[in-house]
Image 1: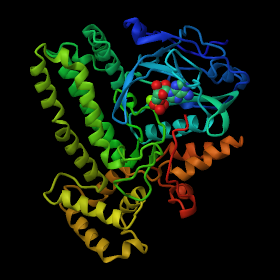
Image 2: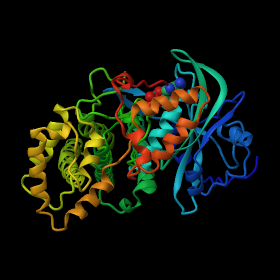
Image 3: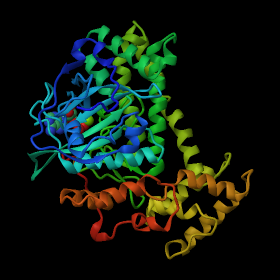
Image 4: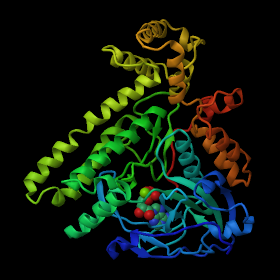
Length: 484
Ligand code: AMP
Ligand code: MG
């Protein structure tokens, strides 16, 4: 195998051995490279451009392990839809921690690379559609300016994988600042050895929040950091209308990156109760519930830290509760500042809350498109068209214009601000599905075109118009599937 710049220096395996298991990817019978993220590869200091497609296929199917890689799978637990379960990487292999030219440490992980000691009844495989879906969504979030794991490549394995139908086996190569999840701490706590949580906490602080190393109470300090990072992440999701779909505690990373994109989707028409996931029957993970669920997950995280918060359990619980109860006070101002920026409002005004909620209510009532409404407002001219000619909108618009006059800077500053936070284009579900269907027929052009548009989601270019339109009724996607 030619050298291609991987610079592994794996630290995770210094944790107690119950945190992981050595495990190697299964052999792919006839691998084929589908897509490589050359821009990401370059930023990681990898030199993939001198590899032929065949070599790329061998590399990203796991048939040829790169130098210095000692693959392993991670143990974790999690609350899935509220219920505790022991899990672990059932179909993922972590190749190693790569050190980038800037000195950043990132996990390089295969997803769909075969059975591991944590596979339970699963086959360890993944299929092309869902792996490309994760590729599209994670790259879209990244370009929208949202912390997220990223996607380096997708290769097919040449295997047929049985799901509801027979599908093409595929492997995604994921890049993450780590794969430490709330569920990793739950796994540590489940072992009922205080040392396990302590070791994981020290490791997490060293890897993600080294500034906490000298804190008086590291557990409380880490809890606060994680709350802050999650509040930031969810604020971003709410800004762009993103619905993760499966916010189980095993799908929440302590780094604050979005992770594990299953049946996630972006909302078209604004409705706070929007749910896409076929497995979310009660709407637990609906758009509007995401901040509350983040807090719920953080409470599960806090529970694992109790013995480290204080040796007196009652006292530890009290401190944890007081800390977690601050979540709304941390999230709310972030959300408000974000919504203010979406409307170009500088400073604060007592009427801002109502101005925002009235617009959202109007959008909900009129099934206005979330992305396009804010995009239409982000222009100097008043938006036109049937929807905007209603008197209810006119009245709101005049109030908004009056409020903009209270800004310290002139109107064009407000418009510029709006254009940096209101995307012109998002990965609309019907477009994503179209690209995946074509890829399944070996036509990669729609996927490439979609990715190109999503790489510049704040650009105003007439060429992106086909990607801005909401779906026709016939193309509307109501349900997304995990498709594991
Ligand atoms: P996810 O829905 O991807 O967050 O996965 C939830 C859990 O199920 C994780 O522990 C996965 O590793 C496991 N899992 C999902 N699909 C498979 C599969 N095909 N084979 C084995 N384990 C799987
Ligand atoms: Mg998961």
